[in-house]
Amino acid sequence: MIIVGVRFKEAGKVYYFDPDKLEDLPLGTPVIVETGRGAAYGIVALEIRDADVRGLSLPLRKVIRPATAQDTEQEENNRNREEDARETCAEKIKEHGLDMHLVNVELSFDLSKIIFYFTADGRVDFRELVKDLAATFRMRIELRQIGVRDEAKMLNGIGICGRTLCCATFLDEFQPVSIKSAKDQGLSLNPTKISGVCGKLMCCLKYEEETYVELTKGLPGVGDLVQTPAGKGDVLSINILRQTARVAVRQKPNEDPTVDIYPAADIKILERRPQCERGCKCPKCKK
Image (cartoon, rainbow, N blue to C red; front, side, top):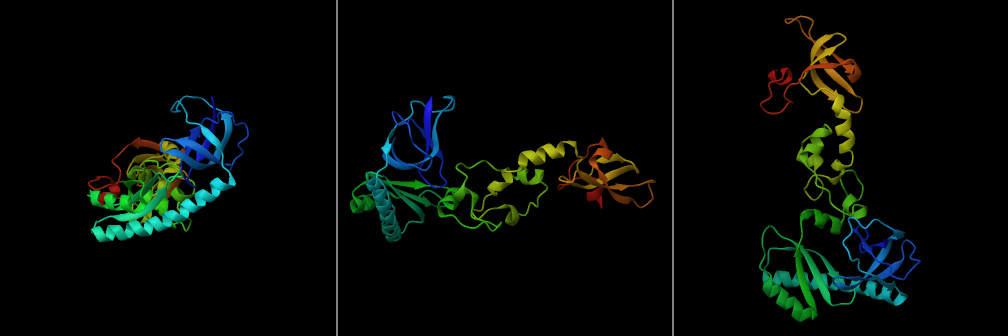
């Protein structure tokens, strides 16, 4: 099936459309497409190509036409009107005394609908606010509550790495991230070090997770009993990237251990023991 990919926001998701009879839509071409909310202005992010229909929601909506200079001007005017609408809505929220934070405003291309995105700690009764906004803007009003990750994506910012947020620059979809990703990579579980500006676990924890999981398959865990070239010992720590383990080897039960670092290839796991967490009974925690 012939498709073309269109993006509506700079770091937004790519949606697939039927190019219909259009044959030349280079990357970056502004287009007017048919959506469930009416005509919309977007930018070609994936050139026309033949694609497998599996995974696509059929039938695909069509590209109406390439955008004209007038369409582009209207889109820019809409963005300016969004700023004015944002200020107006913020004032209305304050007047109604609602416990909600306005994040962003989105105006449809054909000026038939305006969406206000907001965050709130709980449910908000904004029925009177909607009536007030409808009387002010005289168009269809929608208030949509979003999460903190979506808020960070819309507002953008600087991460602890010193770069602009991934979600606002190139991530088109959020991937689920769990604390297991940090554990697999041997990272500190301090929330301030593994959380993004949104307060949730950083999206980048997902980038190298598969690699770390693969690298740890042949490594012992902390506290495991292993056989080394120098004798039997307990694993004190591991270095996933270097593929080494720091082991305390005792030649005799009453002697002080000799601590050394051994390549994973020179180690044989004799006994798997619980990892070093609260309640662990490995030699390291007993000390």
